[in-house]
Image (cartoon, rainbow, N blue to C red; front, top):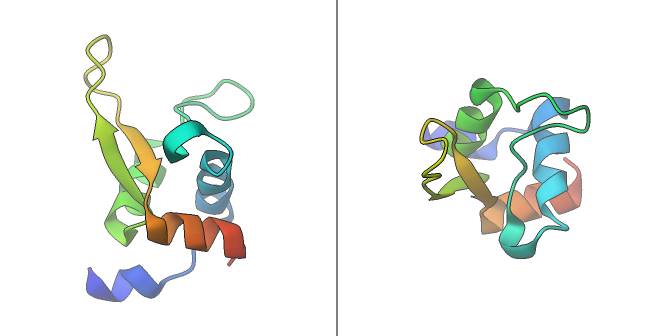
Length: 81
């Protein structure tokens, strides 16, 4: 996985990460702008790359991953790789 940390995000990943830049604590959204849940594949890939990290468990929906930007995620989202 170490090699992945230097990869560039896909357009979908980058859009998701950028949405966390303006949120308190860098919270990443659960849903896109159209109300569709963010793909688990997108979320897990961003976690694997070190751009996002699980933040806390959701007691209402325990299967949802609530994430926040990492420092690396902020750098990637801000730079617009």
